[in-house]
Length: 428
Image (tube, rainbow, N blue to C red; front, top):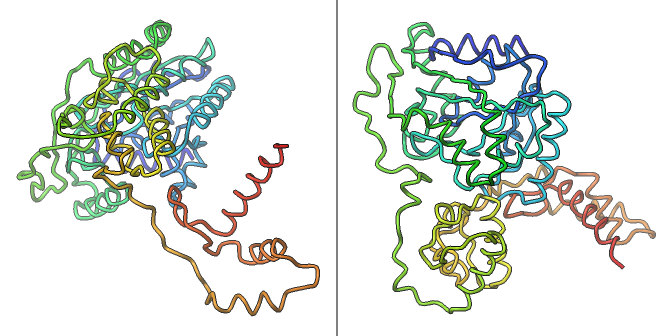
């Protein structure tokens, strides 16, 4: 692994001129909870290469990246801990609780954990952690001798791997392919450099004190630490030494998921709806946020007013979908205000959840399966034994479609069937 890290750092140093401050806070004989800011897709790679020279690391990686066949070997090699992508409506409270238990065990063993408090890329030139809970909960289960470090990136806001380039989340593989192309046309050593500062700060005292004062105070404290320099301006750096590739590139007028987009008010004054819907949604909100004392109306913002995180949103969305049979299924990130939940409950949401890919795998003609099954039949067989027999012969064949996970193979289906069977056996 150290050879791979040295190679990556050598390659990255051709594009990024790194300035590192506070590296002395990392101690080899201590466990660390390291919480970086997240500005661009490239910053975890830079971070891992820089810190790995000093200490071993166990980064948290969302399933979207961890299960990717290209990235998975690397994640396994560096001991990454897979987590559900809560921002994309995947995973629930039990998954979060298991994660916190796992973090506590790793820290007790002396591991150094990389955890991103924001949970996603920054959507503006500063970090926003409103309503996020992962860092707060992680600090609640920390062993007493664990050091808490924040790590801030400066200089990447405006990179092609940041939302400040096109106004939306960049595609990692497209960014890497383009990066390889620019390395080649610059003959590697002529690539213009981007100045990047990585600042490591020991915040153990501040955050241990803040965690005693509740989630909101903790997040405000953490935001102040990250944003001491104020809002970072967008900086574009040419990708070619011959020609300035960013001379005419303008900043995006809108960045998806930014605080500005969340603050944008929607006029619900003309919306006609049954009052029992608002009563039900209000009741569910107060169950999730029992300490909330403000008024709840259609314009109440789920993030800015109620400080909901993705798990809260998923719980509320699930409750509405279960209670109202004609409810729409909008993407989690499009539920911004109570009015959006009412439209969802009425089945009138203007947004539709994008379905997963449905590329099926049929290496043989399905019509040929029946004759083979007929040939294999015995007098002792029944439907259940035939399913088991057939599924074990071709476990990778596509069997059904799941809205959350996409196409499921026979093997996927059987694993779920056995798990559910074990649960059902516990009931009288």
